[in-house]
Image: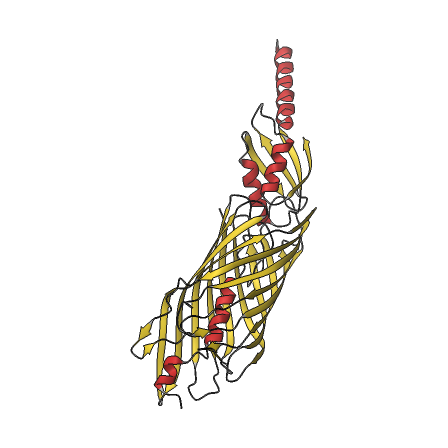
Length: 95
Length: 309
């Protein structure tokens, strides 16, 4: 019984980690070069339904977008929002 | 020696006022790291607002003439920017001004002054060229607009109608146009702008048209190295402002003691965060090649904050 509980716990932990990581997207934004510019990108991306969090790394131009569980971020929507912020989406991938 | 009648109608310091007006119009109004004394080509996000509040003190004096003119213009300038789309942005600029002109007349020192909201300027800027690279970008954006005569231009005091140099409004509709270029990297930013404003006649007075060229270098001092995320930036700023104004016209006649060229060297500092920018700059005149007995600028000081909404 003890063995079963431990295995179940490990499986649940693994599944949770995989699912959480799978709900993050990595966007490479070209043209981003100062913290103030980043605000517009964060705000536009956050307006997409299901976005829970955005994190910008200004030095690399990488934006990590975390979606709510079970919600997918479409590349077309992300590209459109980055464009509306005045910048260009260079690459899009699921983490 | 100047008489009271001359003082009532004098427009000599008008060139200073015109310069102040153009400084306000040409000022930076973006919520990015940007020049302090003029515009930038960086974008305003679609359907988003930016606000800038700026305090400007423009001091002129050292008058070689017998009237010993001394002029102080203080302005609190509000700027609202709106992104129509990712290419087109519209800006509104409204100054609240307090202007004092001290002169010696008949051995007596007098002050003529006015205060109130000045002329509203509205202009649009369109991003014509946009090149986005990783960690840098390049943009060219022409702009055009008009200054509306919303400020009072008929203020009086006990001596009569105030001269144009003391009025907070010009009374004229003055169109302006120009182009601004920006190259921004993580380490530094370069901006340059050329603009031209046509000054029209009002109340028998027509200030000279103003052409100006500005350039700015903003160099990141802090952080020295990136450790991830969105750190605040501290920029050291150096700008140059070259301003040429044509001669004024009074009742159709050219005023010989008006117009000329000024070159300012402008050191400044700028603190940039994700939501706001704080900045200060001092415009120091290094060349003033003015016509006749012009009143020279001593300095122009600027303090400003910008907010992203």
